[in-house]
Length: 399
Image 1: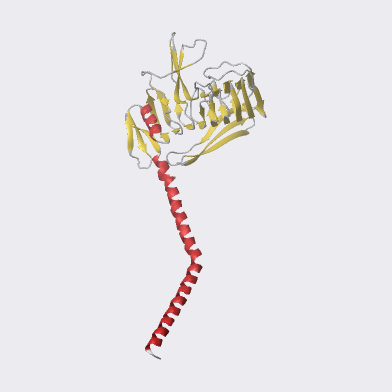
Image 2: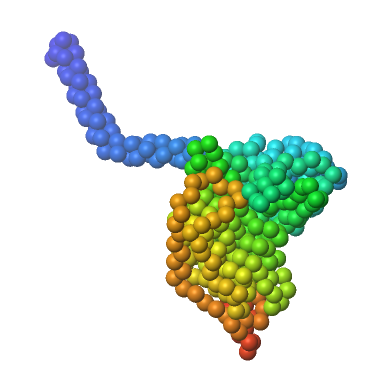
C-alpha cells in the first residue's frame, strides 16, 4: 500500500467515525429533546409562577394595608408590613382618610377617637374596618359637614353621616366597633349623626354607585343607609340598641341583604322597624329579618322586595307595613307608584323571653388577610329551650 492509498483509507475511517458519531449525537438528542423541552417548560412556568406570585403576594396586599391607632394625644397610620409610621395627626379623620387615599385596606384599631368632622370615603375600591373596641365620637366643638334631610321643615335638620361614601363604587365598610350618636338641637336648627351612608345620588337620577359591602356587628343607635345604590351586599346588620330601623334603603336596585336584626336593649322590650324600604327600591332580596316585638318588621313603601323569612321575637305590634306611596328623605329617583312585598316564610316566637347577639369576630391584624365573621341571634323560650339563627360571611383582603 502506497502512501496515497494509506491517506485515503485514513480519511475514509475518519469520515465513517464522524458520520457514526453524528448519528449517535442525533439519536441521543432526539431521545432527550422531550426531556429538555419538559425541563425548559417547567422552568418557564416556574419563573412565570414566581412572577405572578410576586405580583399578588402577601407582600403586595400588606403594602396596601394600613393600621390606624392611638399614640398618646395623636393618631397614627402605620404600615402593616413593617409597622413604620406613615402619617400622624391629632384629628383621626385625617388619618383614616389618608389611609384610604394611599392604600386599599384601612383598619382602625381599639381606642377612643374624637373626630372633628365626618369621614369621607375618598375613592372607589377601598375597604374600611372599624375594629371591636374602637369607639368613634364627633367633636361637639368643631364645624361639621352636613347633608340636607327632606322633612316637614327641610331647613331644620342637618344630617352628618359619620362614615360617608358619596358616589364611590365597590367600597367595603365593616363595623365591629361603636359609632356614638351626636345630636344637637335648638329652636332654629338641629344636627345629628347617622352611622354609615352610601349615597349614589347624581344628576342623572339613577344609581350612582354599585358594588361593595356593608356589614355591622358593632354598636350604633341609629339607622344605616343605602341611597340610590345598586348591587351592594349587606350580609349582616345586627343591632341590639333598638334603633328606629336597623337599615334603610331608598332608590336602590339589585341589592342582596342577608340577616338584618333589630333587638331591644332590655329584656322583653320593643323595637321600631327592622328594615325600612322607604321609597323607590327595586329587586331587593333579603334572606332573614329578625325584629323584637317590632312596630313593623319591614316597612315597604313604593318598593319591590322578596324576603325568605321574617322572624318576630315575641308578638309583633305589626308584622308588615306597605303602601304604594312614600315619603323619601334623600333619594333623587323618580316615583313609580307601585310596590310588591313577598315574604316566603313568617315565624312568630310567641314564647320568647329574651334575645341576644353572639358575635364570632376576627382579631386584627392576626386574622389577616382572610377572616370569617359570624353572628348568631339566640332566642330564649319558655321551658328553657333556645332558638338560634346564624349568618356568616368570609372576607379576603388579599384579593
